Image (cartoon, rainbow, N blue to C red; front, side, top):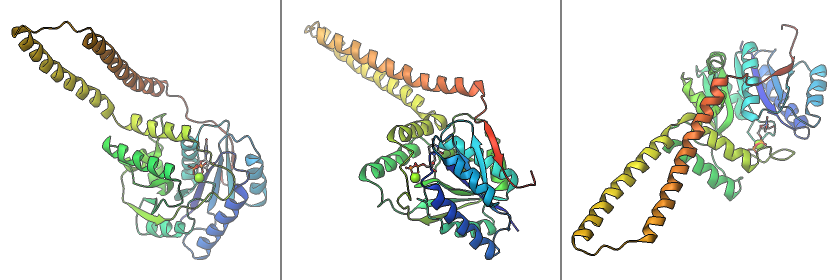
Length: 317
Ligand code: UDP
Ligand code: MG
């Protein structure tokens, strides 16, 4: 039978953890009883350098309950990195991994459906939200705008899918070979290939605590998603340059005709405007190219992406 690992990134989640541990235990026990997963299935709680009692909770629960594994990162590296650390470590032990947030916003009831699809031969099963009614208007519109921009930029992502997904051992194995430092899992996982499927669910409110994803982090994620996966912004600059060149030709023709007709006016306004306009344009362009150079820089450094301090698991390791 297949061993399942539920991977949960946790950052300052002391309030939500008791609820999520209990709920995920229920799911594991239920699936074991139905003989869909093996008895030694587990959850791996990844502490992403929390400042509160998150690790104490994980450590304590691990001592009492051998179904609960813990992974402590030495500092806060962010959701995408914590999740990657958890997936790669869990992938070494388990046949199936499912990643889920610690706040129980994703519906644990579809985990069974995900496992069923795995048994039908799917390597990756995406959890997809079927509506966004529970979101604020702001979050809904920004999120939808994000998916639109991503597809315009030619990045393959699954619409309305966050990081709630099942991955088989071999999918995780392949994923671990992605050597990049700028992580955007939603863009990377579709690149793995294999047969995939989706399950649909309604996203709930956070069970306890507050969102660890303020607007600043959300924008950073979106920006990282675009600049790590697409060179279209550079093409856009080129397009913009060509367009302006075309406008210049038109303007030159216009100037030449006015000159021939004898009605030339020396325009200070147009001159000063064009200086500002071109200056601005050049700055934007240089800035954008700089973004990519910045990324090349961090990739070339090839730093380790995380640092595992402790790994709690069963006796086998
Ligand atoms: N998280 C993390 N590191 C961070 C920020 C968040 O591991 O630096 C975890 C967090 O504990 C949660 C998940 O990522 O399990 C998603 O965060 P959250 O629920 O706060 O995001 P939201 O649902 O509000 O977008
Ligand atoms: Mg959440």
